[in-house]
Length: 220
Image (cartoon, rainbow, N blue to C red; front, side, top):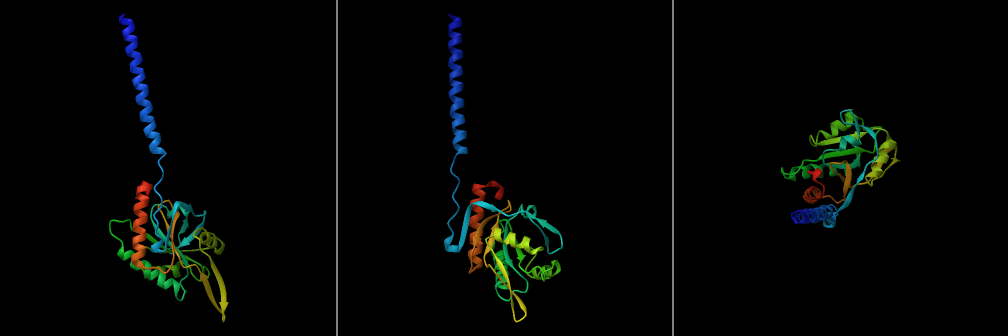
């Protein structure tokens, strides 16, 4: 009799453990299957946010210090990137000024991003030229130059293009005017279209950061 009771108790205990394990396992599985938080809708800020970041191609370029930069070097921080050139007569100076104002508006509680000018005129934009240009705007401003075909591929991955043309013997470069926001994985997570307003740029960045932090903890 005692043996039967003991066996029954053991069976009941195993059943309880099995049910408990199934409940816990179902909860864990449900957490893993939760729908990701959708990207914020920021059309009122001229901004489109991707649900999943878009990776850049592998590349080797030179920064304003003459050091080699690859895709890996863009990881670990937020970056506003755009296509331009130092001799640009209108779009680029306005873009750089807007980014500098944006930088001044960002809360100290937010990660401080970098601002990256990717040249569309590598023949004239040497590392030294880029350094002289970007230093004027602040220590978080940087530049990239190098092989023009590589620059075109990087621009393409940022939804941007540039075209060279000669006007009265002078080189002019037509190029896209939007900013691309790169997340700490080095992927493009948003496109910010002109016209650019520093307050709107700062708000867009904060909202994208808060969304990324909630959805992807590494973004913090």
